[in-house]
Length: 458
Image (cartoon, rainbow, N blue to C red; front, side, top):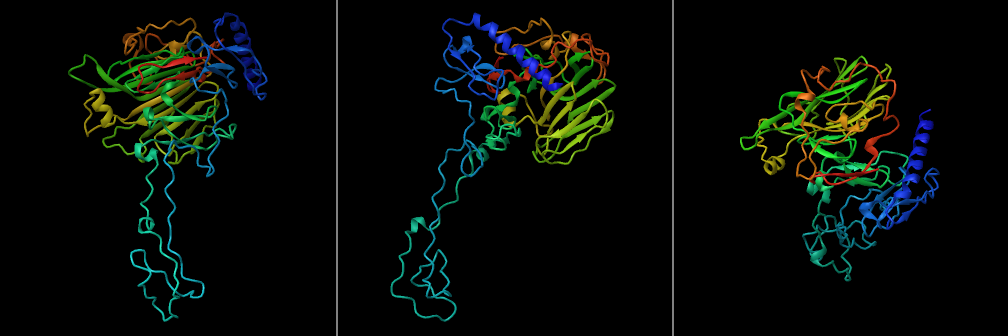
C-alpha cells in the first residue's frame, strides 16, 4: 500500500511539473532525467528555475530541476571511491614518500643482523661469529631518506570535523564511504546519499537548531527566541503535540535572552515521550548526555552506533543511535520522525556571539530535524504552522535575522501540557491529512550553518 501511495504521489508531482513547464522562463534551459531506473521521471521535460536559468540538472529521485555550479556537467553519478575503499575525506595532501630501508645482508650470510638506522653499516659488528663481510656492500641510502617524518594527520582530524557515511544500501556507489563534515557544521552533518556529499543537518525544512533557528515547511528561515526556562509549543495537530523547553542566558547588552532547546515533550495518541540534553559543565564527545523516556519509563540503549529499541505496541515506536553517543533517531510509525543531537556551546561560539558561557555550564542543547507523515492542514505551533494550508510567513524578510513573534500564542504551562492558545491536540488523527505522502524535508536546500538564510526549492 505504501509503495502504491508513493507511486501515486510521484505521478502527481510529475503531472504538476508538466503543467508548470508552460510557465517556465523563455530563456530557461530544458533538462531531462536520463536514468531509466526512474521511469516516472525518465525523459520528462523540465526547465531550469529562475535562480539558475542555464545551470541546472534533474534529480531523478525527486524528479526536480536543481541548481548547479557553472562548471557542473550535470552527471548525477556519485564520485568513484578511491582504490583503498576509504571514501573521499576531502584531504588533497599527497601521500608521504615511501620509507626507504637499508639493504639487508647478502643471502650468503643469513645470520647477519642489519645495524640500527643511527649507526653506519660499515662499522656494525654482528653479535655471533660469522664469515667476514664481502668487500662489495650495497651503498646505504642518502641520510635524508633514512627515516621520513610521520605523515600529517588527515585534514578532518586537524579541523575536528566528524566523519560521516551514507547508510542507505540503495546507493551502493556511496554506501559507507567516509566523508568529512564541512567546516560550517563540523560536528553536525550527514551524507546525502543521492549526491554522495556531506550536508549540514540544520539546512533542511523541519530543522530547529542553534539560538534557535527554524527552517519552516515552506523553506523560509526564521528565528524564535522565546524566553529561558519556559515551554513553547513547536507543533500542535490532532494527533501530535510537541512542546520544547528553552534554556538560556541574559546578556546585559541585549534586550532578550539567548535561548536554546534543552528538551522536548511529545504527545501522540495516549503516549508521551521525553527527549532531553543533560546539564553538562565540561563537554566530552565520548560521554553520552541524552535522556530518553517513553510513557515515564527510561529508554536505555548501548553506546554504539546502530543500537536500537522497538516497542511492541501499535503504532510502532523505535529509537536508534546514529552515532555512538549523543545522537538519536526516533520514529513513530505513520506519524513523525525526529533526528536529535546533543551539542554544547563552544568557546568559539560564545566569543563570536557574546553568549558569556562559563566553565560551570556549556549549555548542552538539542539540534533537531523533523519529518512529518500525517499533518492536517490546520496544524499550528511555532514550526507546525509553516506546514499548514495557505500559510503565509509573518517573519520580516530582508533583514539579518527574521524573527517570528507569538510568545503568548505558543507558550505552554508545562512540557507535557497541550494548553497553548494554538493547541489542536485531541489524541487521534483528523479525518483528512493534507500533508500525507509528502515529506517537506526532501526539498533541495542550500546554505551554510553560518549563513543568514537558507534557500529551498522543490
